[in-house]
Image (cartoon, rainbow, N blue to C red; front, side, top):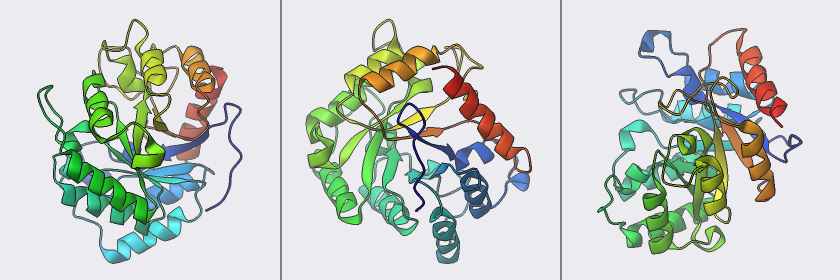
Length: 270
């Protein structure tokens, strides 16, 4: 992978292939390898969803090889667990870890639902989660549990049951700024609340904006999030890792402009 200097907050930023496949018309979707190439051509890291949609076929070995070749030029690579695996089955985690390893990714982002946590009474299969995390460690892939709306209970439960030291467990937290802003379980300023609460476990970040009433995935600056405060908080907790813009993207010549506009708006908020 290429090395790219971090931006002035110490973050190494990337784009998500999800941005190309948010619409409901698969006929206009580009190939996964094209999506990766488009993002990497902007000198950004990349977060890869293994499939473009829940009904998309699994990538073939040839497609995975092409993805790996495209990802080799990225400053960093992460993988987001595919939508059809959003239920608890440890075999799914191992499949995604294998996929991540095959394309050179160091981080696999999972939602609480992927660990069987949907309702507050749900329990963690800590033995199997630990085994999956250990499997990831052997593959060089760390697990990052992403916050969804009002998910402090789920993140806390996993950390309580599995362990709260990512260096030891190979499982940490992905703070999604947009999802945090939608939450009311982390104090009056939930973005700052989530960042502070999980400052010792955060491995990865997701950036997008909204107005506090829907998960819109807007470009930073188009919603109501106080980005200067969020970015200062990220700096104050000492995080200098990877972060991904999870915003809609359009195939074609305008892509670089869309991504650069998102980056410029994010950086202008400092």
